[in-house]
Image 1 (tube, rainbow, N blue to C red):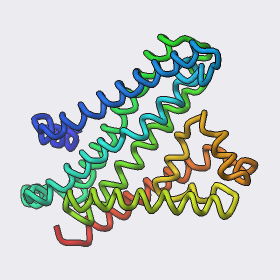
Image 2: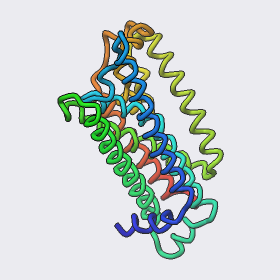
Image 3: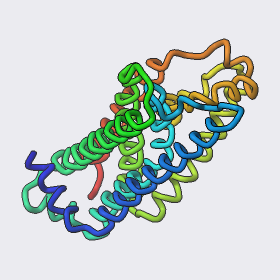
Image 4: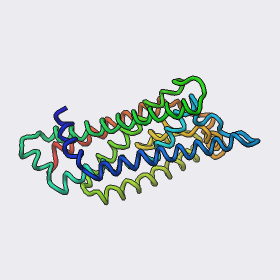
Length: 262
């Protein structure tokens, strides 16, 4: 708690933190409000499409998929927070003041855990509100998506933290992160298409993306890659691999902190 308190003292008056948090919350809510209204308009016509997208229990899946797009802003904050430690030499000052190298690493790890938990709670509350407004049944039938959202967030934030730990510059880290996302997505799609399986889903970030698919796109996926439709892997495979990657990020970061210059 002391390490987490130090991180809070750094960020509570940090404008970038509140701006990125505000953008994440605002865009997530506005997008879902707009999408839910669009769904209602479709349902009022002669052809009813995606009528259950924002009703229970499917709201958990729909909003998790939307969440996966806007978690980018949380990643931006972690990159900026990590890079600021090197830009302003605060990490060296912490060590001079008596903080162990691993305490510095663990402070960032606790910050990432706290952000992931807070974002997941926000997602949960938003799903409950939208679900009760739109109706439906089986409120907690797909509530396992809460765990998936937490692991997804933890994986992405841990990945960008590790990236920034090596790069140490916010701008370059963001560029490399975006480039990696495009490369990984392309390779994943190519491998899935060529192999007729979901083997391409086991890249570091893609494995968490597979936890938050949009239910209504499953039919399109089967058309694009017919072979994968019959060889769909259970979600817990991707969950386990995501946890393994998160642990790997930590041990790589730990080795980096213990054996490199600050």
